[in-house]
Length: 221
Image 1 (tube, rainbow, N blue to C red):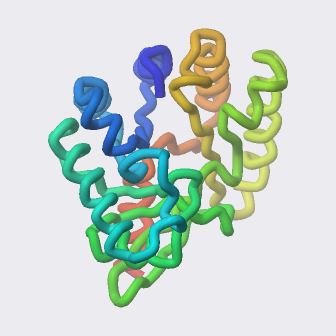
Image 2: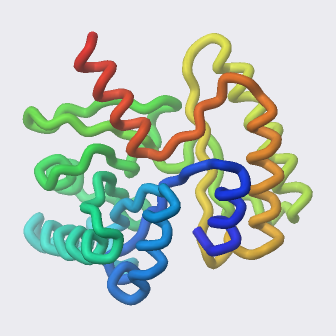
């Protein structure tokens, strides 16, 4: 999420989840401190993008990288991250168990459901919020041009909104600061958010809000 997107979210009164690597937190701590100050969630995206979890030879190697990211993010943002998504996302066979054992509340690695769901990992509950699906990332739609990208988002949202009359639906739009954070693409985001806000009954939430809601509902029922 670039600075243009921060201004857009402020103008629209929307809070988001900022997924960042530990290396970014170490190199640019003020950006995460500012994101936290504005009310956005800061989550872990592993240590950096040079190694995907499935490339590690042991679970301990992956665990050390995640711990390193947690420490850097907590130092920068002033709060321990409660969400995790591997780079890609491309989790390893160990990622889910590590996420649960390290105290994360949600995981974004799995896109196998249109709605969030709870995963029981050796007695620890994680909420799978899924990355992008259903919906898009800026990489998916900006090749359509700015006008085409906006129409694609609006048409897709309309379909989800109609489907939500029958059962809950989730819609995500993922923005990369080097792509969707540019001024023109940020304007697409602003126009889309204003369009969505014109529809009653839509909940704008961070990933941690989804996770806490699902966990509370499971506990109550």
